[in-house]
Image 1 (cartoon, rainbow, N blue to C red):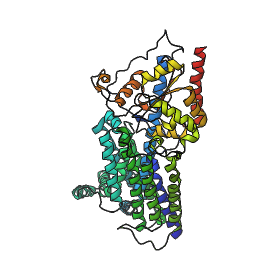
Image 2 (image 1 turned 90 degrees about the horizontal axis):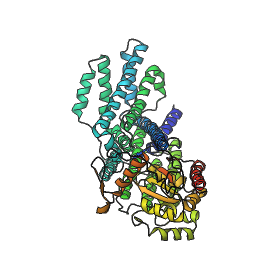
Image 3 (image 1 turned 180 degrees about the horizontal axis):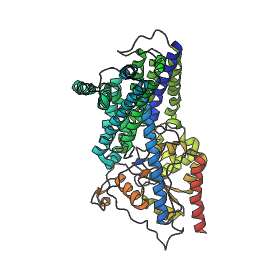
Length: 559
């Protein structure tokens, strides 16, 4: 039995440790959750082609629409799958919290003892589980209806909301550390409990509602974090899909244990380890909160929460988590740790190894596995990595040239590249130098953009093509810097385009029929499309081939 308990404990804490990465850092197959900007005020128009000055045969507008549509659909589907998996992980983590785990054997025993047959017990458990799913999915749909699709898209880049989310996650973390509990009014739970006494299917539904209410002190922070991530992903059904994954993870065990009651004997007993799960989740909430603060800092150019500060805080947070797992750090609700068990030892090794892994990032190491979380490498003052890719002389030359570009005082190109930040300026430079243009529609809060820059652009072959063969144009669609009065315009729907971000968001949506980031467009030196646009591609060879097709099309047209 003791061996079983240790294995269950190991599984539980490993699940919790993976929870943070379930919210943001998915596998390559799922690491394309859509970063979008609302385009409700955009009037779509045909992509113009200068037939007299074009050097390349323009790509048909139907091909542009089809390519953009495929990117949007693919990323939307993958985004929903990623949100579902994050919800599933969150649900399993909630299952082993002190407010729910002890309820599992009690509830299943109630079904088996009050039912007239085994089949009846299974039916009750399934209805109970379905009720849990209905309750949480309905909650997710309500969130969607209240905010609406456009508001959910705007959340990802809205400074006020990101700051609120940061503070909210800090509160959740403090709650998990044991300072206080976040609870709903007890009258709500009492009312639901009274309704559950009626029996029948309606009684089972109210039993599920009672569980949702009384367990809120444990599940609330997890649900809140999940909804924040789902809402800021830009997916319309994100909150509902996230809640479905969360509730499914809660519902499945009740049905399974009702079908196989003997499995209850293998469950570990409730104890101090449940509070350890809460504390570990608290550390993860604290680490995740910093991402939202970083989004605000980047979008408003505060320039004080750069990559070094972010990494130092993460190193401290995960270092303390490792020390906690070793029993050297205790909170008020913790039980005494008389000795370190093997599971705790191995988990602390994993956490402390991850902590050490981040240390070289203070000197510019790209840290590719977590690059989506971190502020851009160009925000770091002390960087020994970028020169190793481009060479000291090249970086110095490019940076000197870049200082003359429009908006160069606001934006910094990644990896020391000589990037432009204004379309007209880049087009003029391309015409003068007879080079194709690579447009990178990006954003400060775009996690997939950071991953592309750290994981794909750092490939030397890819870097050389971007640096030497293309005019790189980075257009930030979520920047909050005000445009000059003469550059401010009004959209077709009457909304003012007053910031740099709104200008390029409107440009991307109206000309290329897309609003996801990253979004790469290859143009000739007259502004005509060379090949259909493309979204994120984390395979360096595939991305290099895409860039090469653009070069081949440009050279073919020139001949």
